[in-house]
Length: 143
Ligand SMILES: [Zn+2]
Image (cartoon, rainbow, N blue to C red; front, top):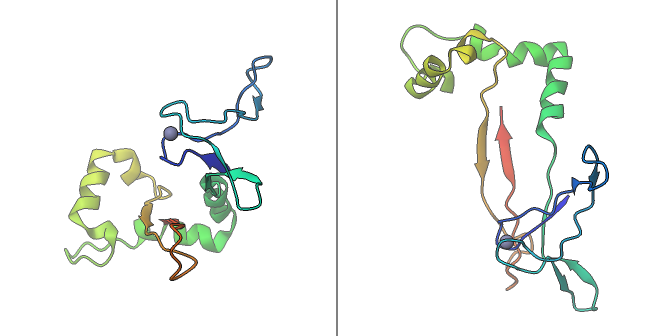
């Protein structure tokens, strides 16, 4: 979980320590360095809370876990080992667009373990019909 600027221009991620730059310390900024928007607001009880929060799951460790499981590791190579050559598009990997990407980045075509990742997002209001302008924008990463 990372606090974010309400204008989406800054993340209050930990910053390198002034004493030891190899370590990170809490980012204590209270406003955005770009437009000056406040990091915090007071709720109805007077409690200070962040204006916007980014919740995320680290992607790389999750992808590495798929290669530790033998059955999932087999599936991660499926697009390379089951490519059709009859000119009929059955998967995204058969499309001209993906073939162009692979031709442009030959390392991707040669490596059966190269990942093809799609990203999709859409916003919704978790509180339904209320007039609050609170919304959630999940970002789905699809292998
Ligand atoms: Zn900002």
